[in-house]
Amino acid sequence: MATVQLKNIKKVYPFVSGEQKKKKKKADEPEKKKSNLQITDEGVVAVQAFDLDIADKEFIVLVGPSGCGKSTTLRMVAGLEEISGGQLIIDGKVMNDVAPKDRDIAMVFQNYALYPHMTVYDNMAFSLKLRKEPKDVIDKKVREAAEILDITQYLERKPKALSGGQRQRVAIGRAIVRAPKVMLMDEPLSNLDAKLRNEMRAEIIKLRQRINTTFMYVTHDQTEAMTLGDRIVIMKDGYIQQIGTPQDVFNHPSNLFVAGFIGMPVMNFFDAELEREGKKFFVEVGGIKVELAPEKEARLLANDVQSQRVTLGVRPEHTDVADKGISARVEVAEMMGSSVHLHVNADGRDVIIIVPTIEMEGSYNLGDVVHFTFDGKVAHVFSKETDKNLEY
Image (cartoon, rainbow, N blue to C red; front, side):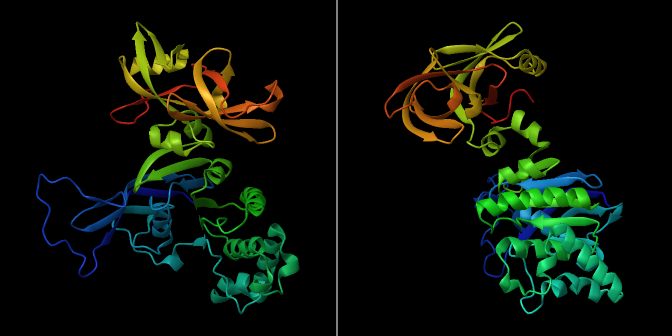
């Protein structure tokens, strides 16, 4: 339905009265930080240099820890927050100063925001009534949306008579009856329990296939991001860290933050040595030496990377128990059904190893000594100075 472009978008929250700094920052004084956000003479910078092109009907997910600026970005697109700098363009038209009601955007909030005194039907029909659409058109659109979301049987109920999952379906239904160009969703599943979240994720995927709308979805849950998004925008402290498909950001994290944020359990990190021998690269850690895969070596060669101390990253699912390798002591063994998550101590560092139960010959107990290794295809090397992935 619509393309969306965010060009160098910025959001600054000005200081309120009495909050102004008493003395101006000297020219050579470094920027002060508060809650990891940049503070300038203008105020607190919540979103900085945000650039993103969203294709028609694309599903984009903004993900990151609390306070990273993802919801603020969404609210700027919705018109609920003023844009401090840059341009918001929808279908080729600059929208910075266009009123929210004229942007042809619908938003689903975390807390549902339903009218408690209205029935489900009236909640869903409300925006159409404001547009003064004919009653038969309103009825058709509401019932079509209810059918898509499987809430037809609840149309005469009040929100208080519904479960959390049902209320969220109503909130989504109220948004889609308008057939908006862009659908914005701000952590819509965070108030639901784990089982309902899984069910609603599947419902949103089905919904996306049935309505021709561009989606922007905000979450702090990486599972939602990985399962829902065509592309993921990972944010930290108001800055974009990486944009890519779920598989891209999982397999090729651009820096330490992305590597540690995407993936569950989190990636294991080690202090290691990267050794360059001609056109070959090896990582040495815990007494073992592993050659990196040819495609990794090619990227490191292209960047003219030299031998150096690095932070080595290996995901728990890519770490293998072996007869020889890095020595570690078992501290916790979590039975997860199809696998066991071994929490081990390797030279003072906490490491998680995922062992498929089908490959286990016995059980693991507290204090057992195990050895583990990894393949050069799954090793990630990060600069000690910049935290960036040395391959990119």
